[in-house]
Every structure is written in structure tokens, then in C-alpha cells.
Length: 332
Ligand code: ACO
Image (cartoon, rainbow, N blue to C red; front, side):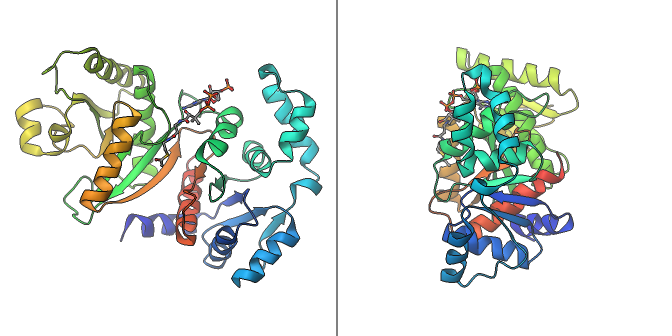
């Protein structure tokens, strides 16, 4: 079974409520109809119900039983506005600002997740990554014990000998341009959780990547990765994690043995932590394009699951992202 089939299966087992701020967007409406019909999630479409119904008519989507919610007329609007004001007033947000922000379906949807009126949120068919990430970072914030929100990229290979049954988790490939050692440690811990909950990897083995393996090179950048490994060990002593190490030492058993003999990770890593966003983003795209791996991105470390779509996404991408969000919501 592919990782996406596994995720869909898990989503069905404990159905979660997913809010879509771009509720009248044509692909989103089609995805919502599929999610409902296949019992994968309970979608909530935000927006003007007439516009949503028009989109459903245009796409031939059956929205029976799906909640269409107009933020403008919602009885929860004042409650969300007041809570938004409370959370952001120290950052200079006035009650008038909060009133304006809550009219934006993105902020309304984020407040639904914050107030636990929805289990998760999916957006990005229209909005940019930043438009969704910023309110999520400002309002939902990080999970207890986690200092930084990051992305976990599930990389699935045809070759089932790679990683855990053909699956590797890469991080961070989307969010943090230049993480500190402490942030890298938190990214590593969140990624192991993603590997377990979403990837079904029973025993995540986390490698902190560098151009050096176990002190083979000396440089401030190497020192940062070594420091990150030490911090992660302190924060999560039971996590199987090692670093710094090179990509081949992490993945190839003979190289791992030669360069880092005795490491519980070298040669059999299934979670790869890149030292910064340039390395991570380039690394996942190389893997996708040259190795033909399927890449599925999720945000990790948020106190309530929210996920971003690419603006070029298909209906199927939205369904898959909603299912991944629902599975994340099963393990808060
Ligand atoms: N984790 C937790 N909180 C964060 C994080 C984070 N990673 N980053 C920012 N924050 C918080 C800040 O502390 C701040 O909180 P506060 O307002 O309560 O003090 C709030 O979020 C806003 O912070 P800013 O630094 O002002 O955030 P900004 O809006 O400038 O940027 C963003 C945040 C959008 C995530 C930025 O880091 C970014 O642009 N990252 C790169 C995204 C990108 O271009 N990715 C690659 C392409 S996507 C792809 O390839 C699929």
C-alpha cells in the first residue's frame, strides 16, 4: 500500500473536521465533496454560501451534508474577534484591527482551529504559503515543548529498499531559512513525530546532515550541527538520533559503517535533517526530479494542524493534504 493510501485509511478510521478558508474555490469544492462522500473528513467550507453553491454547480459537486459557513454572518465571529484581540494585543493589534482581520476567512479558519471548533485547516490553492503560515504562526503557535514550526517532507520511493519500506522524511524543506542549533534540534524532534504518526515509521532513526561525518571536517557550520545533536539528545533522550553525518554515511550501510561505526543511525537513517532551508529545499527537489520520489509536505510543530497547498494543486492533492491534516489531528 502506498503512503497516501495508508494516510487515507488512517483518516477514515477517526474522522476529523477540516476547515477550508478558500471555500468557494473550484478545486476545493470538488475535494470537499470527495472527502465527505468517501468518509475521509468532515469538511467546512468558508465563504458566501451562494458563491460556494455556484462553484458546486459549475463542478458538478454534491455538497449535501457539508457545512457551508459564512464568516460575515457567523454567531462565533465576535467570540473569535475578541480572542484574536486578546492573543495579539501585545503585538499592537487593536480591537478594530481584530474586527478587520476576522473578516478574512483565513484568520476566521485559523481561529476555528485555535478554539477547537475545527480539528485542522487546509489552504493555499489561492493564497501564498506566507499568507497561511503567518496567521498560523501568530495565533495557533507551536505545540508545547516545541520552539519552531517547520515542514516535514514525506519522500516515497518506488525502491522499497530505501529508508523505511521506501519512505524517508526530509526536513526542513519549506519554512526556516537559517535555523539555529536549538531550532535544528526541535526540527529533528518534530520530524521524528511526523515519521511516526504520518509515515507509520515505527522506529524513526534521525540523521543530522552535514558535509562532515563525526568530526571529519572542522568548521563553524559543522559545529552548529554537532551542537544541534547534543541539544536534541538532551531534549529527547529516547530518540534514536545521531550527527553530524554526510548523506551517504546516513543512508548507505557500508559507508555508515566505515565513517561512523557503532552509530545507531548511520547507514539506516529514515529521517534526514538538513542544516538549512537551501540544502533542504534543493535536496528534496533533486530527490523528486532525479529519483522520481513522490513528495508530500506537511507543517509540523503547530499546536493545531494547518497545511499549505501549492497554487498549482490538483483536486487529488487537496484531498491528500486534508487526509494528512486529519491524521495529524488524531495525535494532538
Ligand atoms: N516557528 C514558529 N514561529 C515562527 C516561525 C517558526 N518557524 N517563524 C516565524 N514565527 C513567528 C514569529 O515569532 C512571529 O511571532 P509573533 O508575531 O508572535 O512575534 C510571527 O511568526 C511572524 O514572524 P515573522 O518573522 O514576522 O514572519 P514572517 O512573516 O516574516 O515570515 C515565514 C515567516 C513566512 C514562515 C518565513 O520564515 C518564510 O518566508 N519562510 C520561507 C518560506 C519559503 O519561501 N519557503 C520555500 C518555498 S515553499 C516550497 O518550496 C514548497
